[in-house]
Length: 314
Image (cartoon, rainbow, N blue to C red; front, side, top):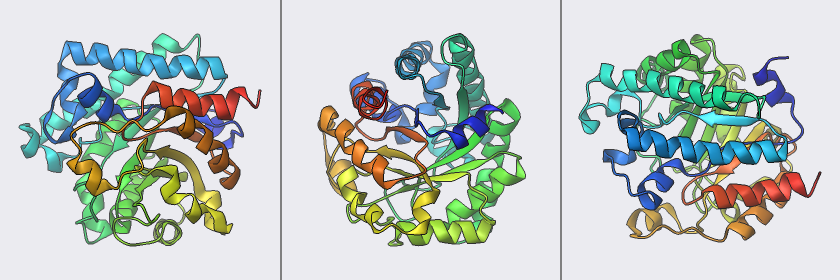
């Protein structure tokens, strides 16, 4: 059984990281245009910080006896962002390839302590992760995202995860592009305070639409960029689509996306409460495979999640 198969069959959620960008920019003092951590891969001090960041989460996975999903810092790596980041399209794709190599180095360094580590090629939206998607059709989305997904696949990523998806067409296009590249995909939807996508679609309708358009191509779906209180009620109706949700990466803050956009300080929420809320989420999600965090979360938050889901169950 390979590592991806182990992930898909696990009944003990694996760990992943927290809010990489908010940690880098708000807590560590780095800066980059468009919240693009990918451009920092050319900076030695940023790479050292990223090693410390991922080492902390991998140590949690070792302590919990779980596998780990190791993200590449490529959320803003789609070539459509190149000009805004002051790079050529090829220069940005080079950074995606470098990000996979960097992740593979980290995995190698931990291979004797955490046996199962998936290199997760992260793809972000062509637009803002807080606003309804601007891509009107799946074919356009597939065309836009194919170069980065191909670069991630060719460099050795084990799977592709589309993070902060805000609409159905873009999610469909990315799932198709990942399938064409020969990799499993994960689609992670941004949710608003009402539990709906920024596009206005319900979570269940979005999952069902992507599955129908791709013949069920995504390995599973995730929820991200919302506090558990924003979507807990959405998960309580027992619908069949709940079995397709395999991961949760929630926000630390209860603020809306509009409020977060205007905030001058990072809202870190309450890590202990954040961890305890995941016990209830785990009970609502029968196929939960991966837990981590999104905006405002760090090692404290994911550590509290692991304590509640792993150590108490040990």
